[in-house]
Amino acid sequence: MINFKSVDETAIPQLMAIETACHSHPWTLNTMSSCIGGRYFNVAAFDEVSMIGFYIGEKAGPDFTLMDICVTPSHQGKGIARQLLAQFIEYGEQQNAENLFLEVRESNTRAIALYENAGFTEMSVRKNYYPSDNPAKNGFEDAILMGMALGLNFS
Ligand SMILES: CC(C)(COP(=O)(O)OP(=O)(O)OC[C@H]1O[C@@H](n2cnc3c(N)ncnc32)[C@H](O)[C@@H]1OP(=O)(O)O)[C@@H](O)C(=O)NCCC(=O)NCCS
Image (cartoon, rainbow, N blue to C red; front, side, top):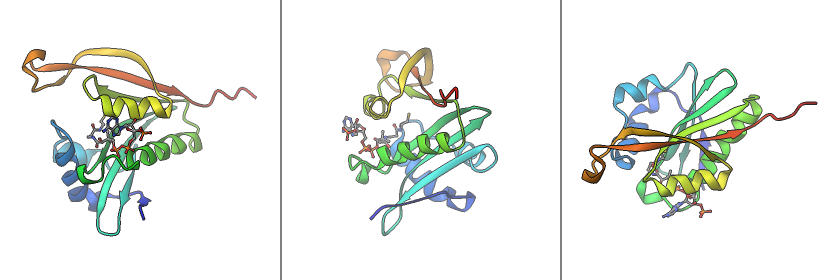
């Protein structure tokens, strides 16, 4: 049984444990701390034992951005990110967001498939946006900017 709930700064150690287990270039503690509260929002997933995943979003007027989404490696491939992403989209709809955005490494085919399946489409490419350990990439890789339009209700 997976439970989903919003968390506050007291959950930063759990968020950071998942963040560092998931990403080749994880957020620093300072970045994570600055993305809790204020214009940021989140949902974390919990099994019977501990936190196993989360998303963090940002509100900027009518534009909501998915800043991060992670599922701890031992729980990947079980549909948890799909459920977290659905909650991000649902929250945007409830809050009358007009656009949802995100950025993803071009090499992150798993995340790109997740986003495409949820209805995000590629909008543009930011060249050499992310640091990369791939020597063939000269230390950087491109970011794909993806988006989804909401609120096309003109009534
Ligand atoms: C990307 C990530 C969040 C997916 O989490 P997850 O819980 O394993 O994903 P889900 O099980 O919900 O799968 C959702 C979709 O992702 C894609 N996906 C998941 N595992 C995959 C795999 N092994 N290979 C290819 N696609 C995969 C599929 O499209 C899948 O949809 P489907 O089950 O209908 O085929 C997870 O791999 C992760 O935390 N990665 C590291 C952090 C990261 O890269 N975050 C994204 C930053 S932009």
